[in-house]
Amino acid sequence: MNIPSCIHFVWLGQHSLHPNMERWVHRWCVLNPDWDVYRWSDKTGESSVTPVHLSGPSRQTAIRSSFTSRHSDLLRRACHLSQRSNIWRYEIVREFGGLYVDTDVEPFRPVKDLLENSSAVTCANPNDPSNFECAFMGAVRNHPWTVELCDRLTERDPRSSRSMGNSYFSTITLKHLDGFRSVTILAPNLIDFTYPNPWLKNLSGEGKSKADSSSLYARHHVSSQWYATGFQPLSQPAVPTTGEFPMTPTFTAELFTNNHIDTWNKQVVPLLAGVPRARWIEIGSYEGRSALWTLDHVLTGEDTTLVCVDVWEPLWTTPNVTESRFDENLKGRRNVVKFKGASRQVLPHLTKGSYHGAYIDGSHTEEDAYQDACQVLPLLRPGSVLIFDDYEGDLPPGKPQQFGVRQAVDRFLKEHPELVVLHRGWQIILRLPETEVVSTREILEALASRKA
Image (cartoon, rainbow, N blue to C red; front, side):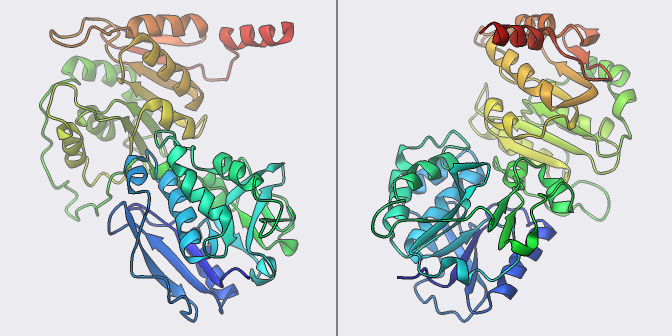
């Protein structure tokens, strides 16, 4: 039995596809005119998806106006849009059959020849033949492979952004390589995977693989665009034509005070105000007061980006009130990316060496603050600033006495003596050297590995 002549794309959330992705999806339609091509979205809610028929003869009568998942609880608890995309691709191919393709896969030839005489197909990463790629997978309806991919999702942790991706996919696929209706693994010279690549460079045409496209059927640009928008991103309404934002910010607590502002005006604004394409990370955004000030006084150049990371769990207010207030206060700010999730889950997916500064005001336990510092540092460019809140002082009455920011920062500074202290008080502001240096910690780790 052959794989149905149907191609599926999944695009979730409120953000639009990158123009290059739109072009590649269209090219799939042009190269495969006898195939039905669908793009599925979750506009009707997180537990169901709706297909848009992009092209083809509409032979797939089984495809309905909407499709409800068997795993609505996992979709609800998923910490990342890429997780939801993984769930949907497995379920859609199981339910309807056909070929699933990521939106950042660029086609070069009709796909029909690849799938003939196969009941299931995928491809391997040429750098690691045991690592199979769920960016390109197809099967007949209810193939044992896709049935197991769907059924065993309940064993995965929805709090981990990569728990349902290639590692899980490869584990299941390895069990279906032999026997009747086994999965066909395409030759590595047919589908090109370019790891690792900053997605903006790939999509702009730079840094591509050197593989000759004349012999390829498709190239996966590994864009990671999910990670730019994935942790329940802000809706992006149009900026009002008057130039004014559509609300007056409201706050219940003054956590970013005039004292902080005076210090930032002296130490941060002169370094970054007006710098084009400056990028800033904020861990712990609460109601958005510090984010708004950063946007209005620090990130004033063209094409800047503010990344806000917070769990938005209740501290001393009614649950969810702070998050909804943050959303309202930041409405219309088109250069804000909101990641809802623990910093330890979000930060590994951000691009190293690309940020001009970071403000850490997240968990105040010593270990969490220390881990935030360690994870943020590789993300910063030479000469960047790194700020910690609540370095000095005690927690207000009634809060849990878990306050180890100072201990965490002092420990961090001992390991990184190259960092310059610009200000030390309630907040501490550090600056990275203008050129990259090897830290004491890295030297000790290197010596330890040699001895081992």
